Amino acid sequence: MPLTHPAPVPAATGRAAPVVEVTDLRRRYGDVEAVRGISFEVHPGEVFALLGVNGAGKTSALEVLEGLAPASGGTVRVVGADPVRERAAVRPHLGVLLQTSGLPADLTVRETVAMWAATLTGPRPVEEALAQVDLTGRADVRVRSLSGGERRRLDLTLALLGSPRVIVLDEPTTGLDPESRRTVWALVRQRVAEGAAVVLTTHHLEEAEELADRIAVMRAGRIVLSGTAAEIAATQPATIRFTLPDGAAPLPAVPGAEVVSDGPRVELHTRALQPVLTRLLVEAAERGVVLGGLQARAASLEQAFLAVADGADPS
Amino acid sequence: MTAATVPAPSRPAPSRLRRTLALAGAETRLLLRNRTAVVNSLLLPLFFVALVPLTDIGGEGALGPRLVVTSLGVTLVFLTYYNLVTTFVARREELVLQRMRSGELSGAEVLLGTAVPTLLVTVAQVVLVLAGSAVIGEWAAPVDVVLPLLALLGGTALMTLLAVASTSFTRTPESAQITTLPLVLVATAASGLLYPLDVFPDRVAEVLRFTPVEPVVELARLGLAGQTWDGQAVDWAGAWAAAPQPLLVLGAWIAVAASVSRQVFRWAPRR
Image (cartoon, rainbow over all chains, first blue to last red; front, top):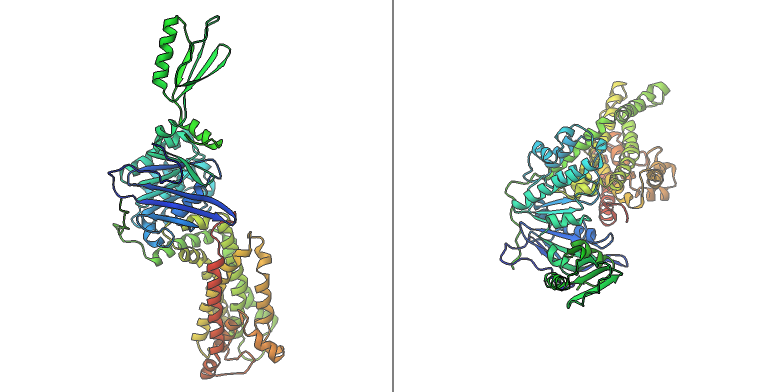
């Protein structure tokens, strides 16, 4: 069942202890409260996605998880420790991909990865890391000459170069072509299969549907909707569309459905798609009416997201 | 559900030194790729030394120790301080500092690793002036070597910390030309660097001894030239007898600069 603020986003039961625990997290810049008391947990082997329009507070929340900024209120624990105050203990277990970041432009790709590896506990071999993101052929190219997508893949390589138990990915596939995006997804799935917990933000809803076990949608600093992709989609009504033949009498109202008609074009909105559709088809069959262009579509994550973005209260 | 406790990493973490050297190595590689900067760094101190026989400014006694004192002060202000302000601000605005801090490097390691090439050039320039002075026959044995080394170490530490603090009011690398002026002016005009403090009235000179670069100059001059801040010649014992005040003032400036840096430094551009 989807929950709304301020209850914590539930995690599946019967699993290992959470490696990320966020409780009533707040983040303030002067008079502006960017994060207004959000709570969630993430377990090993799980992907948790934070969605929201620009300015919803996602990156501000992640910066606390990443140990880059202190919380203004609430608590954050990563592998059981405060990522800001106990930074040294948390860091070897944390892989971070920032939304935007820079690298020394005149180092080559290989030099950059080798330098980063020398600062990490238990890094993967440099050549293996480059191969995983298809950068082997660009290893001797300076960072300033990389395309945006290549630079993003280099960022991802650095984030995953250690053996992190918690991976924070802030819009990991922004600027990537579809093929590169799938490479990144495969890499993330591999780390998750190895037991890593992933906290992810993205503007690509299909990415969240593809990767995330649980999703929270933020608006104005609060989590206003959360659950699995299916649970979140289910907060919005399904839609049935058809066109009545010329001269056909309107069909009788179907219980559990809101009808919107525009001449012969009819649209039904319902939270009980199967029974309403069944009833509609039976009525049509009994009256010998052919429903032109009949479409039945369950609600999507995108619909739910847009409803939240528009300011509608989640059901 | 019980929270996880921080597990020990399965493999040993790299030491602080190793992490810092990894970044310092990359930064040094970047410096070496900038051939103009490297050549300028080496030519400038040699040009400084070459001026002595060309302009016949040697005067009485060996000029070398006084030349090294001046070059130390000038290098610390114009190279170490100015260069580090621009480097830190450029790295901050390019989001490189934030990137570096997102890994296992601590904040101090990121700053020190980034500063290493500049600090190496600082030492190299002072050593070149010293060696050049010996080559042109203007060198004399120092009264003490510990005091000049303390001046060099303390001076580089202070300039690095002041550079870190100065980034808080420096928005772009270009604006460092303006924001570094106060320290540059105080150092050149009132620290005994280009002319001795005894040209000022006694009370003014006593106050100027508390400016940040003066104790560095004073310690270096005591050890290398055997001269106090007001121009009196001293031996080894006399140099150490005169050293407590500049050592304390330098230590106090380092403590203040460290405290201010910790409070005002920003890792990312202002939002």
